[in-house]
Amino acid sequence: MKTDKEFYSIMIVDDHALFRNGLKLLLNSFEKFKVVAEASNGKEFLDSLQIMPVDIVLLDIEMPEMDGITAAQEAIAKYPDLKIITLSMYGDEEYYYKMVDAGVSGFLLKDSDIDEVQAALYAVVDGRNYFSQDLLQNLIDRLTSSSDSNGEITNLTERELEIVALICQGLSNVEISEQLFLSKRTVEKHRANILEKTNCMNTASLVMYAIKNRIVKI
Image (cartoon, rainbow, N blue to C red; front, side, top):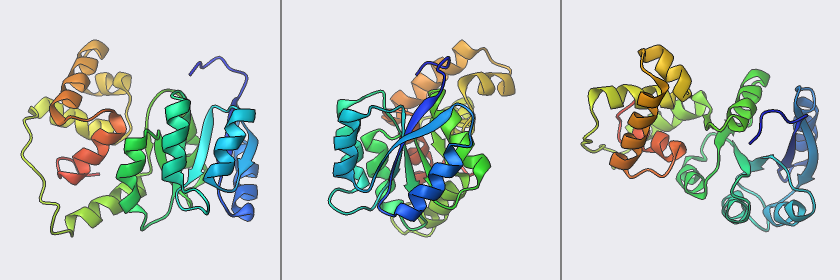
């Protein structure tokens, strides 16, 4: 997504009008971002995309007629460059892996503060994924207490594990290179090797993999 745009267009998809209205006011207060469309369910969202293409979608998971998972799958299949940020609540963890597989760019809790919402928007337009740190911690706690989440042995090197931890904190390749005193090219090579070793398709799935297998702590 180009960074020289006058503004990034946003669609809010949620079945609660009051929530949409509040979020719209918040998002329109941000420089470079503007809400141009709304939808109350997944079907309406897909129909609206054909009329009003947007850069970013803030998408609820549970909605009538068509849920967020199905809507995200169909939208990204048709519009691969579309950036979708999932709007989540505590307790939605069972859906996270499906949303990651669908190709969403990030997750935000519905009660996130203004700074985190803004950080998520800038992250996805910069080509990165964004995960609410509170959400990740809650997911870690849930997996830690689950009997079927014992983790698995990975063949990641110490340096690769270090990079995975920084990726899970939301750092970009440039930020990781600066923190570890490595070249950006070296970090990119490490990231590619990590994805290959873990059989992860993208950064979002790597974050989930790292948490599920207890190779990182937030």
